[in-house]
Amino acid sequence: MTALRHYETPLQTTAFHPRTEAANKLWSWGNWAGYATVLTYEDLAMEHSAIRNTATVYDLCPMVKYRIEGPEAAVYLNRLTLRDAAKLSVSGVHYTAWVTDQGHLLDDGTLFRLAPDQYRLCCQERHLPWLLDSAHGFDVTVTDETEEIAALSLQGPTSAEILRLAGFDVDQLKPFRMMDLPFGTGRLMISRTGFTGDLGYELWTTPDQALALWDALFQAGALHGLRPIGSAAVNIARLEAGFIITGYDFTPADICLREDRLRSPLEMGLGWLIDWDKGHFTGKAALARQRDHGPKWAFVGLEIEGNIPADGAILYHAQKREVGVITGACWSPVLKKNIALAQILAEHAAGSNIWAEIYALRELHYEKLMMRARVVERPFFAPARRRATPPGRF
Image (cartoon, rainbow, N blue to C red; front, side):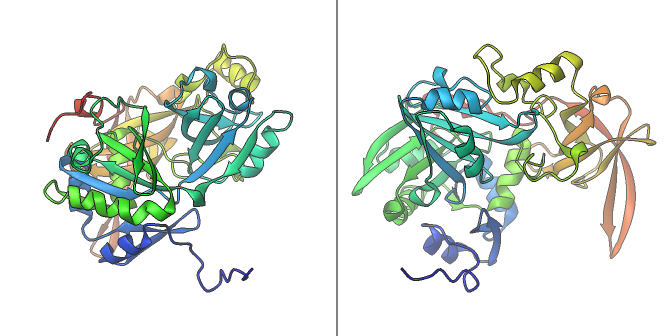
């Protein structure tokens, strides 16, 4: 077998690379889990606009995917994750997370139940050693199948219409459900899931069918505004939807160097995921103690005065005492508001007299701005079309 020469090609390319490379007019690339991923193809404003007004495709191949199968797959996942995997029906999907014995977040992700004894777990970071160690004693097999799956995210108001025109009947597909269809010489799984908070789908096939899938979508979407988008546009959309990202909004416990940076699901607004009645799971005792005593931190959505994004800004109470930090922020083109996600001390989660320290670049010099911040409910943007079944025709 020929040895891999990673020093010559440090980033892997996805099955869709021939199409994404040709469309990447800015030659704007980033690293996602060791793969080259597009940051912005041509125009960030137009890419975000397409998410909210027409339709978009985003290459999901770099997303880490694990296949979990065996007679005790559900039992194993109940030990590993916060939610009850046994309650997830076949062809269903749910959002979940997993923690250390101390209750500190490792990652969040989506769990797909493909069959009674087979699941797919998708997440941001690589966790195979943790998953394998956690599988000790269970009749289950855990496999990294990232390279075996070609995945695209198709999001936006016209996404359902494009699928109809491509020959896929998704009218009865409900949110967090999936369907399996023949495609080309293989199969295509369509799940009504996504990371934009809008109407959308994720499409899953094998790498040999990837380019045919891309071409079929763009042929069907020619009159429906379909365009490829990069990670920069997705980041704005996920902020509007109030979604968190591992490594941005919290540091995974296995790579966190400072103990005061560790966070639990309760401190990150994910307490609703925890199924306290399903039996023992990793971190349950620690989380129960934190629940009873009250978490130190809270995770909140903010609206901030002005139009300068407050990414990385420190939060103060009464402009004096440091009480938190903004983990993600943007000027929302849809809402015409300055929005942000933030970790804040729980005693200040109500948001009284909170200020953000923003440094704005003004012609080569930074100007310090103290802007009032107001705690608001998440999501910031939640159109009814994201859940309508059948989806409307746009």
